[in-house]
Length: 576
Image (tube, rainbow, N blue to C red; front, side, top):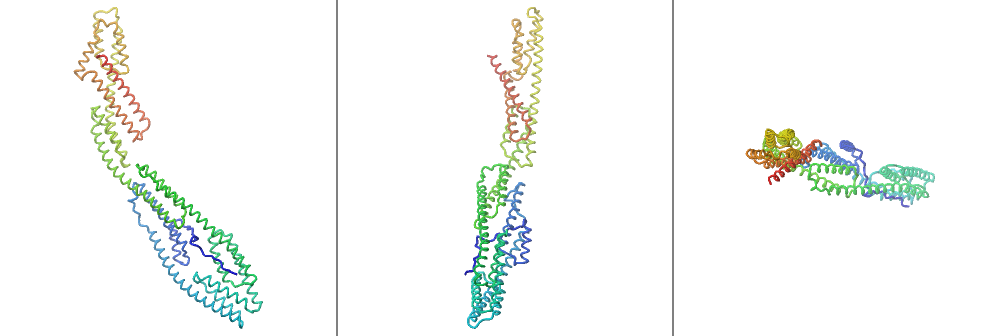
């Protein structure tokens, strides 16, 4: 019968300790406890504490970098502060390492000495069996050897099975050949059987232990107890061993399944982490050309980093490699972002200088009354403004208000001048309506010489009156022509016009030239307002009411330009 059971743990089954610490301070506290009692220092827990500490440390540092970048800093400029917890952690880990090394060295010395002692006991067991075969041996002498064997504990791990097999063999041989009093022998077998039954029951209860790793550890202790318990009657040996082996198999299978599930979960974790790396590596940096696009992408990267933290470990062989890939992708992103923000700061400084120069030019032009030429220059300045990139936030409003203030001042003064011209045209319309009323009062069939002279004077007054609003020009002209039809043979309807033309020519050029100047001025105003409208849509947060007002102004100016163009064409036809 072979009562040996292989309980060695494979490298893939190394215990994974779930650290319950939630802060680095918690981890420091646990390490201090281990330093105080080095016997509780277990490699899986130390590895888990180490990984958790640096994971928390990376998280804290990433949050510091993100906050620094959000405050207009760059990842390259960030300099972490000295971390006292990191220094304390390293110091404690070194102390534990030194103490463990010293403890292990001392343990190995004890194990070698114990191994030597047990080999000597085996020789004494062999001698006792030989003595029993020839002349008989004392049962008390045998029991004394058993007690000495049990008191010797630690031996080298690779010698445990070898020693146990030899011990079990000698113990069984002694009971089989010893001619002891059956009563003593049966009593010993009975006590050993009771002890092994209790061990079996304990092993069977472990099947309900929720902590699979803890159950596996307890099973190892039960195997130690089983080996150290003496033999049972020959007819019961196979039965009790089969029972213990069956209970052990249940725990070992659960333990194996537990680590297989861990391995499967770790593979899923690796797949998820690989996807995160691929997303980070696929970032198209050439499309991140604005602050907003970089900030939006930063939020995506931070979300991926948070997702990474929530994912558990990948398989041990790939865990470090996938983390290095993830870290490299994150470092590349924040490095490129830092370069962009650094260059952007330099560009914004240059942009501020260029916009300041435009403000100075606009301020130098704002008092000009050369409406056409200055309006063209203002439009060109606004075009240049739109082509310049942004400035730092703290200057955005002030520099914009300075520039648009100078532009608006010029346009307001020009609009006031234009309003004066409209007032004049309305006054001319009222005068012409008054002339029409006076002409209608004459009876074409009963005119005296004084009437003819008076009518001629009214015609001269009509021709001497300036322009009326373009929208009523044709209507008022047609009405004048209709009223003058009965008097066409007795008055000179063109004399006053010729006089007006001569006077106008002497004062400011021909009427056509004057109309052309007005027409060009309207076109310039239209261009300026359209430029302003485009600028407002691109850069201003003004309400829709302000934009609608500008659009209405543009439509009015277009109508007035059309009216002027019609007057010019009418003059061209008349002169032909």
